[in-house]
Image (cartoon, helix red, strand yellow):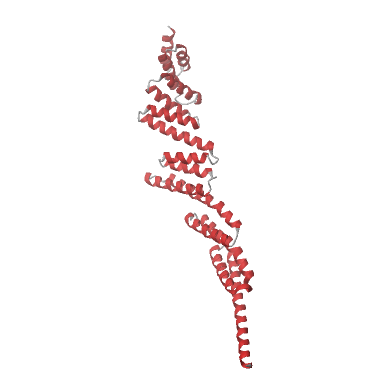
Amino acid sequence: MKKFILVFAAIALSAGILSAQTLAEATETYNQGVETLQASNNTAALQLFQQALTAGEALGEEAADLVANCKNVIPNVALAVAKDLVKEAKYDDSMAKFQEAKALAEKFANEGVVEEIKTLIPQVLMQKGNDLLKEAQKTPDAEAKKNGLLAAGAAYKEAFEADPTNGKAALHLGQALSMAGYADEALDAFKSAAGAGEAEAAGKQISTLYLKEAAAALKSQKYAAAIEAVEKSEEYGNNPQAYLVAGQASQKLNKTNDAIKYFTKYLSASPNASNANAITFTVAALYQQAGNKAKALEYYQKVASDAKFGAQAKQMIDALKK
């Protein structure tokens, strides 16, 4: 019996020594993680902390402090790994690491890291979109440029979905889609931007979209459609070029009074435009056509000294005064 007790005691002592050695090894792994972290090798440090955690959890109560320290540091280091990938512009890889870090932070109840990741993800997606947009704009090949713009748009869309209050993401999405030739989709994005705090900037973009539509309609001799698009453009902003398009379309439709209205709006908004005298002469001729001699004289006199239109304007003035 005495011999059995001695053997049992020896086994217990051996187990205690083994446990102490294992705890020491786990602690050493943790300390190596700290040193590696201080050397700015976040990926390797994360692996060491995770190894220390696994070892500590296997030891049970005696490694409780070590486990607590690991759980405290691991989400932050995982977040640092994701940030490192952002610095290298490896955005897709960083997104995967952000999700891993978020899962770890939730598992270990680190709300600070969870909230920081929620804030960072839309910002990183915006950065990705900006880089893709710049690259697309530099690309001379039309098809490659379009694909690049759509890729940028996809990143902006993700950013807006991640943070629906980020109006700039929706605004940039609209711009990318517009440049890629997707006017209807761009319009939807701009409307979303307007509802997310970017009403003024989005309004200007929408106005420009309708102006492009009006110019295309004018070129295709769809004059009524051009005027309709201009009217939509006016709802979101005042663009002198829109008045010019509407004036030309109205003139083609023989709507003299409408043409005068739009051309005079254009002159009021752009008095120093390079074609201001040409439009002024046109307005004078339209007033003359409408039978309004007083207004025709007024506008002819505005260009009476112009090198290009002066001689003809003076002839019209003399004729109207007879």
